[in-house]
Image (cartoon, rainbow, N blue to C red; front, side):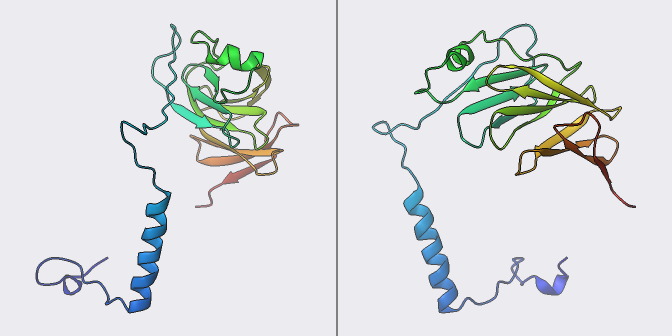
Length: 193
């Protein structure tokens, strides 16, 4: 919080005087960032990849994520849509996912609100408006398990870096710690008031 004394006469906030080492450090930082930029022009266009959801079940996209290895993309709507991002990968999965009419992964009774790829990128968790979490096989594109505990929507889900555990956050104000081996949560992470 700023008091009226911390604002200069011209209405701006005063900044401390920078010494020469701070200026050199800032200059080096911005020079390094500028070197990493790619100039986009008609001779060197940006790489853009667009995916479309089609069909009666689509509507708005609520969430989207990319796997940590950069090979897959998923979007949540009334189901889950998967795509392969690796054009060099010639597998049946890639041919099926890149096709515009690839079937969405269905199972939630309502909208999919969040998605998270496992650290190994072989599984995908979806959090639903129906209060369930669903574990999907990315390679085989089918459901592996349904986790249900909370009566309201589950707004977020994320994996532990080890890949065996995950957490969910729902409308009840508590987070839940889960294991892929159990259908019930291991622990409640409720906020203590």
